[in-house]
Structure formats: structure tokens, C-alpha cells
Image (tube, rainbow, N blue to C red; front, top):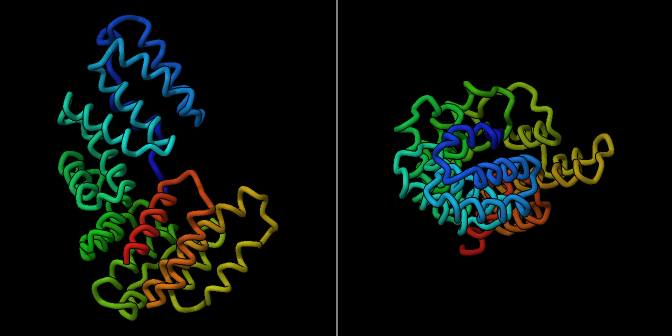
Length: 279
């Protein structure tokens, strides 16, 4: 899945320079933004703390600090910041959207869907690209709505195996594996390894061992191999679960979580693992 770039989200919440208390918070915000764009949230956070002391009503700073907390693996604190932002500006659509993602990371599925739904009421043109909403709908067991969401994403990308798999899972959740396989979305070539093998696995053409074998193709470096193993085990786990093998599902999902990646899908794996353990 593709995530909107951070700077495009931040741009929607920019405040005029004159709305800040003085020049200092403006400079701090600029420095913090650079740190976040450089994937250095630990450097951004103290800058934003200082900026908020000078400009506590700046929605831009609350949004940035929520992003910093999120990057540091602190979704509870990110949620607090977004809640404060929305207290200041209840109609901040991007903040509502991001809060939906934070709620999901906290396992608050109902609240996640509610925020995503509210966001799309405000920004209906964002429907097709909203694959995160589709995932939340799956966990909320709103399978028909999830199916429609992933069918919408076809208009954004026709080469995304993950979209086809989550569509499969939504159909299977309501109508079973056979119907899901019969209605599997057709896609072009997903260049990420081993995604085409994952696609063929769900299509019934390959076995789980074929997916793991593909991970080693081309002798990937350590970082690439870690990413490949994450996605391989995530989708092997989802395949095992939909096939009725709960033990293998948990083993694969737990392995996926160990191969951490900087992506929303890692949180999907973690949330899924926690739900499996509750079962």
C-alpha cells in the first residue's frame, strides 16, 4: 500500500506566520519539520514541545507533534495531540483522517472506521485511495463496505497485490474462500518481491513454501530481505487464517511483526497478532 507523503499532509494544516506568538516558534517548527522529513522524530519532538509553549493554539504544531509521537511508536500520545487539535478546530479533515489511523494502531477499530467515514464525508474525492479505511472495515467485519473500498482502489493502482488480497479477504469473510478466489481482482505486475507469488498463493496456484523461496531471489541485502520477509509472513499468516489454520496464522503473523518495517502495514500485522492472541 502507498501512504501519502508526510509533507503533503502537513501542508494542509499550515498556519500563517502572523498567527504564531513570535518568530521563535516559527523557526522551531521549521527545524522540526526538517527533522521529521529526515525521519528523525526524536530531534523534532523537543523542538515542538518548545514551540507549543509559545503557541499553544497552533493546530499546525499539534499536528506535527502527533506525527513525531507516531513515528516514535507512541500512538497514545499522538492521539492526545490530535484530540487537542480537533478541540481547537473540529473541522480539520486531515487531522480526523490521521486520527483514524492512530485509532487503528491502538486497536480501536470502531473509532478508526468512524474517523475515516467522517473524513470521507468531508473529502469524498478521497474515497478511492483510502485503502486504510478498507483495512479497518475488514476488522470491523463490514465486509461488503470493505470490498467496495478495495474495488475503488483499483482506480488508483492496478498493480497492487495487497489491494487484491484484502479484497479477497473481505469477500471470503462474507461468502467464503471459493467465491473470493473466483472474484480475485486481476492486476498487472507488482514489482515488489514476493508479491506476485503472494497473489498466486491466494489464486490457488502456489504453496506457502513458494512464497518463502521467492524471498531469496536475487540475493537481497539485509534491509531488502527484512522487508520481503515481513510481507511474506504477513500474507502467509492471513492466508493460513482464511484457510482455517489458526496455529500457522499466528506463527506467521508473529514472525512478520519481528521483521519490523517503517510502514502502516507493520501496525496492521501487530494489531492482527494481538487479535489472534485474544482468540
